[in-house]
Length: 310
Ligand code: GRG
Image: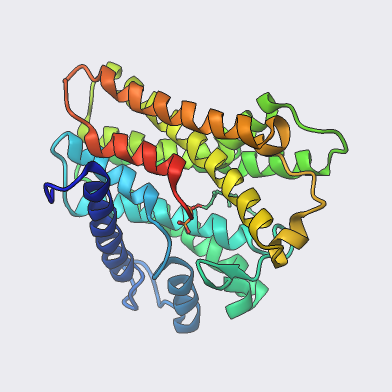
């Protein structure tokens, strides 16, 4: 800690964990084949690296690392799990940007993967990152206890799959195709799957590493759910604010879409209130830690999720 304000301490930790995640991803996506692999096609490996290195806030790795650290667990295994989670996140972004989905040209300030390479490569990059994430988690280098590794794998499969991120994306597409406005309840449900599930996994994975009590895991779960929801409402609000400020390309492209957002369902002011309530709920969830641990940095992360500017 710097001895600075909580917000400064949070930013410092976010930067440190982003750097450590970058190093781990760089190593994992290196050219040497792993045991059982024949070779790693060089141009494709470069595309996988393009999609996952050198950008992003790395909020999911941050949450995983900080949750584990709260219980005294640090090191290479935690960073491998954090990197696996980031691989899933990056795969979802690569696929989400494809012409068949959001059709975006820019991501993290650079051309999207299908623009920098081509569509077939981008689809396969997503597939490669998705598969590799589970390879990394299942490897004994992540945790010596196979029971812990299986728990990490199972929870990630559930968070990323049909009942989690992918299912949420499906509901989002179906909602957009509907002609009628969306209820706030429907939006909250699909967002908790599409975006919330991976953020929730981040804290649950930290708890799996630490082997916390049921009560503590429930507190962390409530924190993860509220933080994930606050993060997504904040995202919707940022989108609208960006659209209002400058009628850019994306704003023009999205203007006539029947988007399933809380801003569309509730209006901007009510969405802002909901975002702040969710952030406060996340913080309050951490007050009930049975161990009496002071989770200041995680609480600050809940404030950041709601007030971030990008
Ligand atoms: C198409 C088979 C197939 C699967 C893809 C596309 C998809 C499944 C899921 C979409 C999930 C998605 C893109 C959710 C959006 C969540 C969101 C707000 C992303 C931005 O996250 P940040 O702000 O991004 O953390 P950075 O760049 O900071 O990492």
